[in-house]
Every structure is written in C-alpha cells, then in structure tokens.
Image (cartoon, rainbow, N blue to C red; front, side, top):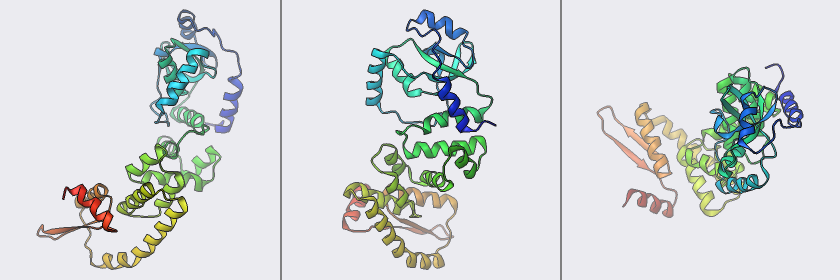
Length: 304
C-alpha cells in the first residue's frame, strides 16, 4: 500500500472535517449530488444505492442499540458520514459505517452523508474497513480475531505483518487468532458477551474439545471468575498427563472419518468421547463424565 494504516487514519480524520457537499435531507438534491460524486468528496447518497462490504469484519449488531440509534438519526440526521467506494455511477460499497447505514434505513432516511474514497485493490479496501472497525470499543474478541484472519488470508500477510499494521504486539494478534480454534458454542458466548476473553483464553489451554466444553459449562453455570477457570484448567491438565501417556501407547489411530464422528459426539455430549475400532469393523464408544451431575446431564441428552 505504501501509506500504512496509520497514515490512512490521519487522512480520514482530516478529510472528515471537510464540509458536506449538498448536505440536505431531501432526496431530490441528494440524487443529483451523488450522481456526480467525485472521489475524495463528501456528498449525500441515496441509501438504496449503497451495498454492504462483503469483507466487513463486523458481524453482530445489537438490535436494541440499533433501534436507539435510528431514533436519534430520525431526529438529528447522521453526524458522522459513512465511508464508501464508488463502484459505478449508481452503486457504492460501504467501507465503514454499516451500523449507521442500517439505522438510517430503519429511520426511513432516503439519503445519508457519505465520504467517497478510492480503493486501489482488495488489500487496501479490506484494511480501510478493518482500520475503521478496530478503533471501535464495542467490537468483541471474535470479530477482532476474524478481522486479523481476513487480513492474513485475503492479503497474504503474516502475523508479524498484521501486528505491524495494527500497531500491536505479535503476541496480542496471536492470542486473538487462537480464539478461532475454540468450539462454536464458546465462540458464540464470547460474541454475545456472556463469556469474557480472559475466560476463553484460559479454556484454550486445554487441547481436547470435550474438556474445553466442560470448563465452559462449569464457568457459565457456576459463574466462575477468570482466576477460577485458570485453576480448573490447570488441575485438569495435570490430571490428564498420566492418562494421556498411557492411552497413546495402546490406542490405534482412528481413520479421519471416525475421528470426525468422535469429535462430533464429544461436542454433542460436551464431554470426552473415545472411539475404538478394530479392523473387522467392531469397536466401542466410551463417554466420560466428571461427576454425578455430569452423568445426569449426559443421560438427559441420550433420553435415558
């Protein structure tokens, strides 16, 4: 890119201070101004001409907060313009401001102020969207992790390069990316705020999905603190070392198809499941439980 993400931020801040061209709430004036919208300008654009950015890092929008914002916009209009790139004379793509755009549609606005930028390639467009969103305090850890992963996948960047662009330590980026290895149930809890990143980071210390789900369930049901979860994980790690060493010696490696079945069952029952299969097709399935209440929970799942 050449500029770097910090320079882009400075440019956005400076250019946002420029007066809005054709700042009128009427749809007639907005249609004419948007048709000739030049890059680097701020004009009012009909909301129907704006499409969302498929690479938008943000995925979750609080409906209550969105409704409150729409009510405010209905009274006062949008104070901060959204940012778009011009795809054609009648089509613009959002780089940032999807929440404001959604709230404006809810409020019934026909047009909104938009800052028209150029994006030379996919990397610049993605970095612009990422930059805007990562500055917001309401992004959850999973959204941030997905943003970093998108930079690595779409722009072919390493963790070090992502850390450099985001002005973060490499370990910080690595910790966020590790969150994406957690089971979907735990990721969802982090996204909706029912589980903190501190809890999730402690749970990542366990390698087996069933153990991760067990600790997650304990943390949710008993309201465990981060320190308590860390201690529980530590206790489970020390207790599993001896068993793991023995089992590795006598277990035969499952074929990938059967390993997926084993993992699916472990996820379904939220506990450790061991499948053994012989060459003649015979085998066994062992479902572990950690206490009597855990056994009752598993039995309910099985309908027993």
